[in-house]
Amino acid sequence: MTYATIAISLVSLLLAAYTFLSKNTKDTTAELTTVIVKLESISSGIKDIKAEIASLKNDQSKDHDKLIQVESSLKAAWKQINKMSFGQNTEEE
Image (cartoon, rainbow, N blue to C red):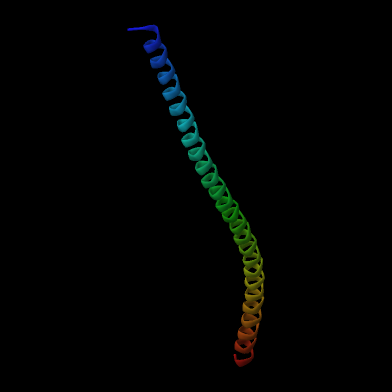
């Protein structure tokens, strides 16, 4: 082989390697961009879920407070019913 043939082979090899690496880099960049977009979408979904959970906790707290008020009112009503019931029984006897 002559030096010219070897030189041409080396240049071709280097050009092929450069082309492969630059193409691979473009593919890798495209894949990373896709992954980043998907991660941002997941992050947005998680933020929405957290906001919804916070809203549900707030609603649950309000419902708990109302339940306490209803239980208190029910207890007072039963006391009144018992007073009226015992009062009528004592009058009849």
